[in-house]
Image 1: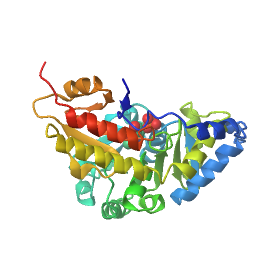
Image 2 (image 1 turned 120 degrees about the horizontal axis):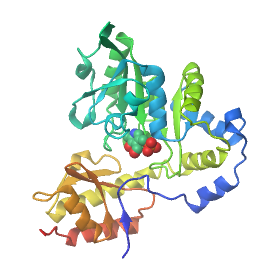
Image 3 (image 1 turned 45 degrees about the horizontal axis):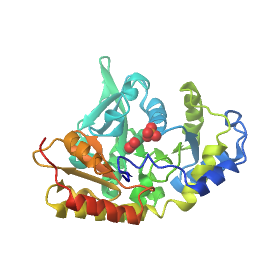
Image 4 (image 1 turned 180 degrees about the vertical axis):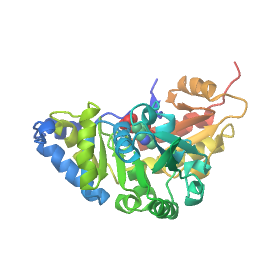
Length: 340
Ligand SMILES: Cc1ncc(COP(=O)(O)O)c(C=O)c1O
């Protein structure tokens, strides 16, 4: 049986062309800062984000953690959406390693506005943490941050002497969906992480972007966390290839997500969050069935989905073609969940 892996956009394998670029990469010891391909990737990431400098890190989690460590700081607080990745999926490293207390704020789709932050800033007393940072995630659950919300948050942060970190794991999806350049989004954050290993199809790696002073500190914190790696050019070559060839094609993933969401909606058995399908992520529920039950039944038809609490998640990705999309739609249209 053919398998359609829609659990995430992290499951993709490097293409032949990407593997060739990795094979041919010029390399050196990046802990000595002598890897030319990594340097090239870092310069490109700085250019794309409009920040002074960028640093290659092993993962999105590491990029976020380094920023929380430096701009959050021990015994301080970070304000973030309660469904943010740093709260839900980074095993508490924000507190356990960076020593920062995350304050989760409930907001529709996890999109914060300045008014959500009102009254939440603590300026510190002997028994209270000081608020130092706001963290936003773009996209969050596949949903793009409205610029107006980001602008309000940055103004608020500046007024209250807070830094802003943007977890832009999928920021290129936002760029392609909204026609807003990464650089424009990044204007409203002091630091930005973006992932090469999600929709862009790389096997490993994320970029952490910020000003020169921050990136110099980040280099030390990366080493502290065991993240100094040697001949990273092999990985950086994949990143350079992806930034050249895999950004604009994200629109295909978005179109395919819309097509699949529509087929699901029209099947009659699923409640789909149609408005939420802005990029490559689809969420749905099935009345009378748990997410786990639906996922197990879909797997029997070859469709792999992710369990996100009460909802089922599907994510289109580089390994799902137009032909696959048609086949997925036809499976979903003839599928009906059964009670065991
Ligand atoms: C929004 C978001 N941020 C950060 C990460 C962490 O990335 P990594 O898995 O590379 O640590 C993920 C991973 O899925 C993510 O979805």
